[in-house]
Length: 109
Image 1 (tube, rainbow, N blue to C red):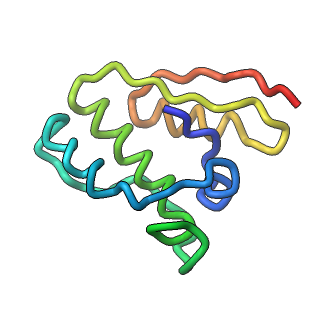
Image 2 (image 1 turned 60 degrees about the vertical axis):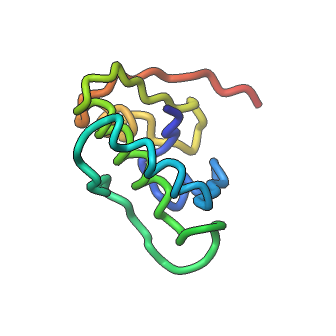
């Protein structure tokens, strides 16, 4: 899963998330585990900015999904692009802290 940053605001800027499909994603959760928690360590939380949600919310959704996949025994890999403005070690720590594999993808300008 492309997490790409450990910073919620930067995630929004890099990924341009559309949270309008949240209902469809929620429908898949029973296939992963009986948990429906939304833990994930989001930062930010100010209103506006992203379709279907608030700024900073999308990274928490992705991290919660990563955590549920790992807990369900699904081999899970978090990736990040080696951009100069991204703290790769922070993303690596997030991935490893949740029990996921981690891979850095090259950045092409």
